[in-house]
Amino acid sequence: PISVGFSLYTQSLKFFGEGTLLSQNVNAISGALGDINQFLNVGEENLFTQKSTGGSIFATSPLSEFWRPRSRRYVQIARASRIGLSYALSRSSVEEPAVNAQNNAQTLIPVVFSQPNIMTSRVTPSFVYDTRNGTIDPTQGTQVAFQFALAGLGGDVRTYEPTVSYIHFMPIRRKRSRNPEVFGFRLMAGHVGSFGLGGNIAAAQASSLSFIAGVPVYERFFLGDETTIRGYNVRSISPIAPLEVFITSRNVSVSNSPVGDLAPVASISDNLRRQLVTLGTFTGASGSNSVLVGRDLRFIGGDTQLLGNFEYRVPIFGPVSIAAFADIGSAFNLTTKTDQTFSTQFLADQPFLQSIGVGGLTELAVRRNPQLALSPLSNFFDSQGLPIRGLLVQGDRLLTKEEFSALTRVGPVDPLTGLPFGVQTLFLRGEAQENTVARISQSLFSKLGDYRSSFGAELRIQMPVVNVPFRFIYAYNPNARSTLFLEKKSVFRFSIGRTF
Image (cartoon, rainbow, N blue to C red; front, side, top):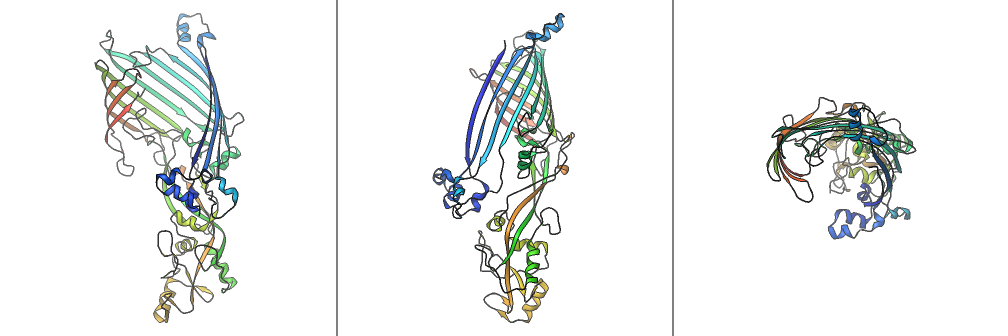
């Protein structure tokens, strides 16, 4: 029969943003860090809101409704095949907290990452040929499925995604029995790519890794779980991109205080002021004053996947059976080779730089110029109680470590500051943003040969009414990498459902 259907949905999620911990909003901070009662009673006006709305319509039909061949062979193919067409439209947006409209510094929650409204318009034709003798534990037959998802059609996301799968079951022993021993396998292949980068997607890609080469990260391929490769954790098989973190700063000033309101310094020359501002003006991943502040790794998914699952199923009694299995697959990058840079918004250097663990502009200037001296004592402390030390200046020049050591030996030294008389402490203040470069071109495990495999057995108990099995799985992973990524050579798992 011909089937037609549609669905509509709307969703609204409230969440704490990264900027919550950078704010002075007591209610928001206590809700994020406090006990369950404070969490449940935080005002909604202090939360970010993600709104999603959309709908889809689909139609499927037997191929024989449109194709009536004369050959008996083709008649059987037409009767066993279905064609389908679906269309989905969705829109997603993120709104900043309502308190930000008050423009009150005591309640303002900084927006660290911003995302424009994203609309996705996708059409998906499909074809399925199915001769299996059942959908629950079939004993013979074949299924071939193909679909081609194309997003664009007036939306912001512009992607294409062909996928194909081949499933086959055959009885091996006790063929005439109602419950024969069965060998089955599934082969799957898929690829996703982008054919254009709209303005909204480019903006989203510039602020996070939510899109990679124009493709939403959740549409890229990750393997690992009881439905793909059984011995690995969920979504743990994927290319891994090295991340390098840099800082860009602007509107740099010289201050007597590293925190709170800016305390301008009037007692230094214009030449020294320019020198200090230049020291504190960082240029991101490139330029003359680039400073690397951190490294990380990120699972980014592959643009291509190949997967094979093989099982030999043996009935024991009633609803109980055992199955030996072998899984092998790879999620890799066939076309995604270009590095990406994404950045936060510009925020006041404090407490933003402290929150990401790099101190402040003063500390970064010394990291970039390690010969410069820092004050041995400080009256200022960060959120962890550690002293915030400043640059040392005497007259019209910055002091190096050697010069400060020599002055200290000669003396005299002010007992309150620990500094020789005539030496003062200065701090660099301004606005900063974090720039992260995803080195996709250097991704680990991004090639076809970086496959994973699992071998093992599972005990299945078919549950009545719901018609799904409880599964007790033992898997051995011969090429697990147990050092850096803590993949295990052997695992026991419990799961509900089927692999294929």
